[in-house]
View 1 (cartoon, rainbow, N blue to C red):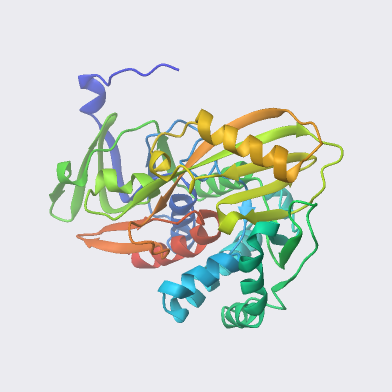
View 2: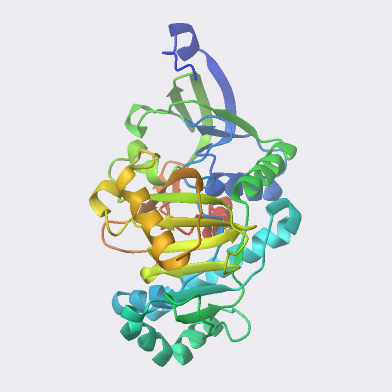
Length: 379
């Protein structure tokens, strides 16, 4: 791929004047544009992204989970957050998943409504029994978040290495690439504009003239009344004061396995390991907790140490005595806070500049709700 330095002529030209410019074409940026254009038809909206066409930091490079919270995650959250905050976030995540299905057909998303599971090894009996003792409380949280039915239940074993399981109702798998493309198409149909492969400098290099932002980019100058920074892990590159820490999620995908022993979405190792079936193939990701410092990176590339760790988990825990080949590997970049807070960051910076970032690895679920919140903030 060519990576040319921009010329003087490219940098010093106008790319147009807009009502809203959204920096970031991932799911948060797209949902913001889509819902804003539904509210304000005829407005001029431009989305900018430094990544090439078809790519988005985590939105198209994740594991394809439509999930809202595993038992151990929620119990850990309750140890250092207010219960009402945990319930609010749970409600937002579930509402986000409902929004996907409310706006798109299942085949547009490859939506697979299998139940989710959290699984435990024999060495994690204490954690499993802690969840068992808290099932009533967990289901009360789900009820308070308006999630119907008995959400968390005792599940079946997933092979000899994972004898304990909690079933999570309403989870699903999806094809995030198809979801991203379907959302992009909706934005374009409503009159939105997209420019990709464009670098935007820090906000300190923008100029405010009357009620208009003048934003210099690598391909020309953009003028806009309002700006939304929806670049998730890269938001702090534009606003260095933001508390946004990148977290790389690495993934592998095997060839087809005729004896694949599970269907649905699965969380393991307190959520740091996740796996699912993609047809008859195993998708496995995670390991960020074992290599935490190295995985606080903006580089969306796989590393040998994490991939070896994931392959060993697949071989020893998930598929003992079942041969497999790894066909694909990739990485996506999530965004977290330094203090462990999992609340998304939706905030006005003043002067018609807004931030919608830090999805905490839950961008699929949160993006419709965060997009709606941002669409309401814009005039």
